[in-house]
Image (cartoon, rainbow over all chains, first blue to last red; front, top):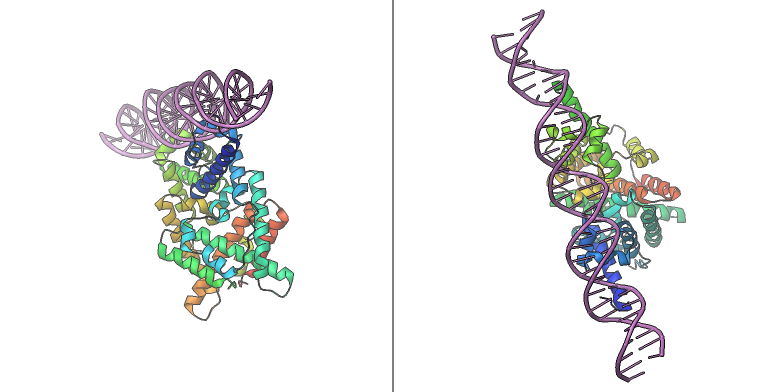
Length: 178
Length: 178
DNA sequence: TGTACATCAGTGAACGCGCGTTCACTGATGTAC
DNA sequence: TGTACATCAGTGAACGCGCGTTCACTGATGTAC
């Protein structure tokens, strides 16, 4: 049955939220269109009223979750703490570490969206970075983000919780953010 | 037709080599059993004479490519250079950066194999790491590996070659290895 | 060393399940009067 | 403001393709004598 315009907009939002979360948890390939729709409280048949294809959903979900949320970074040290926390490892929200490999071989649209998101992240970290010149601070901001993403990727691979925790704390300790 | 014992062993090796390379390039889900067999110069029907299932192949291929190859690291600076090179980005050999996300939600066998491989990598990098105590050197070794893996993940996501190159050089410059 | 036969690695057609996608239908929305 | 009707978001059954897996068959290997 037909639903109101507002309901349509909310349904679309719920589909994107559900998709983004499921994709981060299980990757693009291991999530079905029917699962996404079900998680959004709908049936799978209506999916194609919102998106042209599953690929289009992937593009839209990544764009949705990386949307210009101004990464304030008022407190860089706390940001690093929470990024490199066990909670974030076990309930990942960062698409770079959760989906990096798949995005690298994904559509040009997804890669472009992620690239723009990374640029914003770099710019957000620069003010908190050390270095005499702007160039040095930018270089250190990129290195800091690389360390955080790499540590999260490794911590999520490792099956020994002690080692996984050690990776997170070692990476945190190596960062100049405070 | 039946083939000689040596041929069987070589076929198995070729299946594993082909699988490892295809998995790194395209991920586990986007590679079919038939493609692996074809890349190994065989037909798909014979696959189940070598492995019980595609999952078993994934386990075996990861074990195969991370096998206790003594990571000599005689020259840590050159190791970092080549890891963070454009050639390695465009023709990835490191399973941590190429397959990290998928391994994190993979079988316990694959995660265990990768964990043991990471332990060996850490131990290999420790002698080249800075720090007054063994603890500090270990911590720095882990941070170094995190930076390398994270930079490679980010460089492979980014669709702008200039930024991708910048990520690699920034990460390289931040490492104390020389 | 040579011959006869059993074994079994590899072949390729076929199977069946899962999933992306389509479509006829339903009934609430929202517009025209 | 109320009523009649056209629109169209969502439903759920069905389709069809791709891929993992199976299986009857082939013919070279390797063993027994």
